[in-house]
Length: 412
Image (cartoon, rainbow, N blue to C red):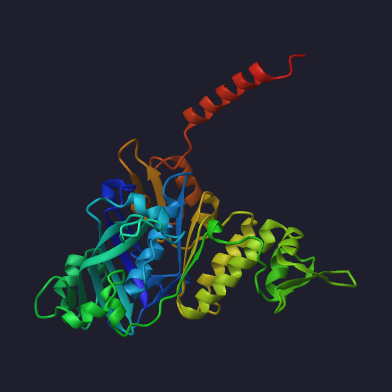
């Protein structure tokens, strides 16, 4: 299964309360020179999926929320149980409009192309609502209405991906939930189908691993299980690092005659943050690359050298390490990283449009069509309003610090 495109309507953070992301190449692809895409087969042979999608923006412009929404989109189309109380999705709850979420996604599975339309309500169950007066408040998803469309034509073209209305004209309704009609799910099926899962759960779709790497979700004191060749990329002084069946870490440095056997937390403190973080990211990437899934990384560059970040990105671009078309979706504060990306239709800028206007998520290729320009220069130029730091805000901070130091500084 491959997620090709998704749209949410009902997230208050974003402009017009809408968020849309393409995981396919919307611009022209030349197979002979492109290594960052994978051409689909069958009726979708005119479409190429991206292998790398970057979300760039200043602080507090919704980048992490875009990543969370991407993970949610993948879980929905796969029919996974949506656990809103999880650390991954909990921050999304206050952003959902009172009217709920409308969701659309186009995905491909085993040569067939599908469009899923769902409406999700957020149900709050307060403490003691079961009549006992005990328990914590829980929040759940309720899939109240859904339609699943299957593409029927021999050939699919890109404009059908750009406009789901066109896709639907070439599709048949395959199944509905609480909509009615000839393709409505049987009442017995709906009784069996949990309301916190999409109806796609009941169909024989292939797997779609969703691997979200957000530092806030990770225990930095756990040692990743990686090959020495991986660890050596991030710290050449480490000769051996692994964990035994008792959970003890075995750490040996080059030139030492004996290894250290100690708890993982202590071992992690003997290594740099970048070493353990980089190794954990590679460990997660291995699962995505093997399963052809979606790997989501927040602030990929944190604690890592620029060349090492580029090496991680290249693992997804290179056909030999990514034969199954896995996708890396990452956020970054540093536009310089964008210069190493081959395609401009896989880069998004997040910007705040002023009080009350919400966050705007803009595809780079909609701002600047020339691929030969420096992506970092375009980002910092302010061509897309809101990507360059505010000089006025920086100057205001300097005035405050100057005054504070003058007032509180050494009286001598």
